[in-house]
Picture 1 (cartoon, rainbow, N blue to C red):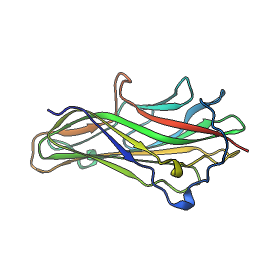
Picture 2: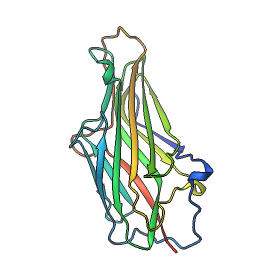
Picture 3: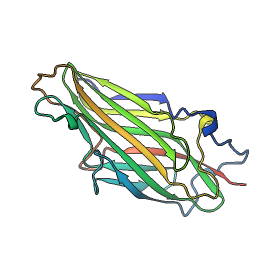
Length: 213
């Protein structure tokens, strides 16, 4: 049995055309008052209706997404469609006039049980509605594994993608889980999950803020 792992990656790589140049203006220490977030649309095998929830932190510096039915598995009596699950969340973040934000980092957490010949993949990306999608980041787990997992993706400061000032753009988040079994005849079930029955396992997205001028 392994200990839980934490991996940090320089993520959210984008093309130069996709990056909105930063404005030379002071950033607020905390998020402004009046920020709200809600799920505008949800779609995918990893997040059936009613199984995803979003909550904003008190300091407006982050929001969390909690799933209750997000798991991919392989081996045993698993069906082919069980091997890969994905979820697209479209979030409506209301931002007070005069401010904009970017996602600076994201923490993905879950649990995995993998036989010695099994593996799993966690994929993630995000983009603002109408903008090019960020580079998709993939994280790998290998068996034998039976523990919580966590991956942290950080955006370099010069590659932060800012919501266009004064425009209503939903933030779209795409995640994916994949499980594989090196022995197709194995009776052992291996799985990777990004869900929680007690809201203790969640994905957290961290903001940075700036003024619009």
